[in-house]
Amino acid sequence: MASPPGAVMPPRRVGNGGPSAPPVILRRRRVTNSLWWGICGLGLAFLVAPVVWILSGVFQRGISGWRWNVLWTGPAGLGGGLANDILGTLLITFGVAVIAGIVGIGTGIYLSEFCRPSIFSTVLRSASEVLSGIPSIVFGYVGYLALVIGLHWGFSLLSALIVLSMLVVPYIAKSTELALNQVPLAYREGGEALGMVKSYMLRKVVLRSAVPGILTGLVVAIAISIGETAPLLYTAGTNGTGYPTGAFLHSAVPYLTYVAWADYDSPFPGQHALSHDAAMLLVVIVIGLILSSRLIVRATQRYSPNRALAAAEKGWRKRMPRADTKPEVDHLFGREPAPSDPDELRQ
Image (cartoon, rainbow, N blue to C red; front, side, top):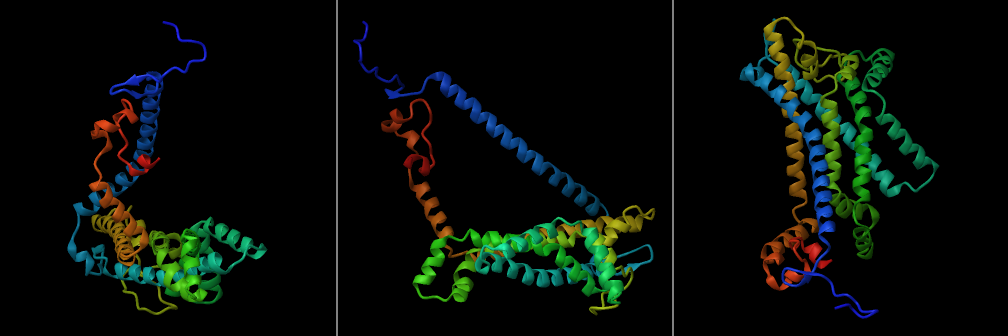
């Protein structure tokens, strides 16, 4: 029987009588969704595969000839251990963390909280971005000319610390600025409403909320400094058999990246094994830094509003029954399963 003119056609009903989109549209949505998930998985594979390949190669070569006494034994002839290089690397890492951390975090705080938009702020940010794009070997060569030769410091710890700090300060400053800019404005407004001065509010409210981003940038910067070789060749020199003296001037410093670089092509099996051990130790130090930073973030953000909200939402989701198991709501979604995300249900 034909419908009268102007009559509204009722929606098609599927299953328990609920309206549903045409099968062609549903099929197209499924195909598009599967395609995008496949592209995301492919991108993740391209990201993870090189990391797994590099780490597996480093650990396979390092573990195959590993000896625990390399941790406390110094070099001896064509073999020995890496105790002096480990101490030198830790000393350089600690110095860079202190110098670059203070300068970088201070720069990020100034750019985010105190520097108003002006030509000066634009020039300062542009200079920081340009500085982060300079090759590390250029930093080493400039440090060699200015510090080792120009100021007559010789190969020394202070020269290496200054050059490596200049290399990583832009990364710390940028990550600090971004972390502070992501702190909600309501935190600052709440602090001002309570009568806090800006310095106290920054120290007690804003910086605590920005700790994860700041620590992430600091760890990335330290990892970059640990893996550098060219700047240290120009500034720290090398002290193949001696231990670091702790003197800032006129004293070369041993470090692991030199062993990994110089002994890799050595024809002697002992030095070749030390190269693999040094590379594995560098990776272990970086992984240890990342894990320690995550633990610090977890401890400092224990009572943060975001974590409390996430915990409450997680508990609420566990208590909430799945909508797709309720027959009375099947007509809302047709043949498609009901979304289990509360945000989708609210929409």
